[in-house]
Image 1 (cartoon, rainbow, N blue to C red):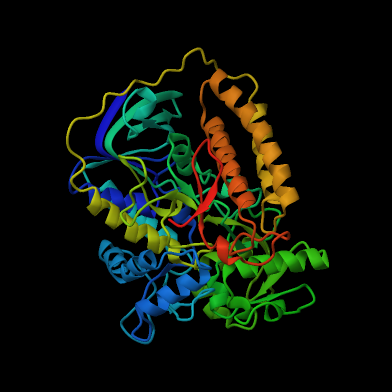
Image 2: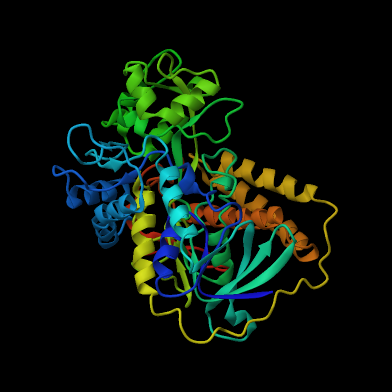
Length: 532
């Protein structure tokens, strides 16, 4: 089946839905999302949106914090345009009906502080900020006639015309309708990747199950330029409990006075960084990893017991309730926490308007490498980037949803048959996530990276053979995508012979000035360092 639209958006998080709402003013929009529309990384974001909303704060201060945490790889012009877009982005969400926590001191919004920030500038809705933003955007999309949402549909690959004798251009995507097992041809004049991150490439992650790197993998296979995949952020504090799956303990707790301790009560962060518990995320995650390995502990503890109990229950209602479900009363006892894969700072290279190196293909949000985050993301800059870039990209593509649709072939399954050995998928899925955690995690080495490279090469051969022999399923597509993401991360990490930001290797423990460049990679070619 062939389905056409002026604008095709893959993904339904903050960036995808914001773009869809803006683009719908100028043409027809289709949003494809592989599960329910609300199931995105945005929906699970707890902390908030960083924006300059206080008279004592400034764009210059926000930019300075972002650049410092980016360790020399953030692009100053991109940082400036994103931070300057913060206040208006917040105002538009409020106008859509978002309910952020009000200030108790004036008629403004309550602002909290998180790691790496020198000012209180994080706008929040309790500890479920992402859920509140997702709610208002979904409601707005549902009420917009020009937007059609295809839930439980997953993109298989981008339709890249040079594969069929045309120019190097994207004209839509082949999309699997999971319920029927059928692949449809979605043709568009503008295709926008808003597929989010790839935390599921690691064994332990704060991300939901949908975060399998689909967008960056599809762009990679289509020949797009990818950058800085070695910089994968590990959130320092996920709940450590056998029944808790991927539950994040927001950085905002440390912003409100939380202290990280060992089991004996030792507040260890003061020994490792001048900002103590509010050090940048890469420092805190690496320090927790070090202390756990040094002491043999399974976790560390985040202590909030010195704070007022009523304040904690009101400020962090979701975290408080979830911890109680697991028998942990954060008002009376420390919360056991461990680091987990959280945010992909690299991705598809885009310009200041979300344009990739392929005609017809744009990308926004976590799937991209825009130049904002550099080697490490500043807390709560992710939702900000999604909001600002969605609007900029919609403006840049305003007049592109016109003209004739490309002539593209329908999906052809060939001689592929249904699989009777799905165990291959689950086995390879588990193996990739485990060796990525052990060999390409918070602390790396050349030896570990070589082991990971050998394993991913073997597994990719198996997956490629399986893919061509069997009909596609969501599980198979996600496996194929995380294998591509793993390959990119390993290749980029192996190229960077230094430690910088989120990439730390015991073989090269110090940063090098000659490596203060982006790691660029294109499918079929080895990565290289270059100034973009």
